[in-house]
Image (cartoon, rainbow over all chains, first blue to last red; front, top):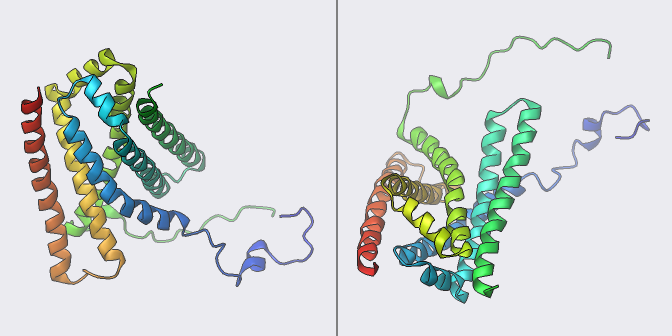
Length: 131
Length: 136
């Protein structure tokens, strides 16, 4: 908003009738996109985890770092952490109405999802590249 | 603006607590709660992966905690939450297409969601327990 409006119309009045900003449903659609992706990826990840139960460190590190397993795990991590970030955002927006607390939690939510997600991806890539 | 207008006392829309619980409502709440549990539980997932990267000692620590009684209890709960949330998500995806809202289909989907999550959790743990014994 400019400091000196060129006319007397309110900001709402100026945008009314132009339709949506085209990004309002972004999170809604991505929540469902990642939900669909999560189904096969979660089944694959669960099978991988079951296959790793009881194995020693060397075997786990080798299997997790093998190319097909590493690719599936990285895709799983991206989709799941993206999905859960949107989910938690919806919960925060539903229940926390005090502005400062809401924005603090929304920021923390994104920080947590990004930090946990990238830590996981880093671990998989490090096992895979063996560095 | 000279003065902020005092908001009028308006009736509030009814909130969760005043409704009689029905299965679809309870399952909706459980879907959200399992989502929160899965969110927090990713810390265990991250710990597992970082332990695998850190080396045998760190991985042994993770394994000893994960295979303790409390660890198994948490992982059992996590398995159920994951399966329940996944099946619940499928239910919502079906509903997103506009199908399955009839009285019979709706209740069937909800019951299949609940029964399926419990059944699949048991199956996964039986298979997992068998592998645990077989590979040690």
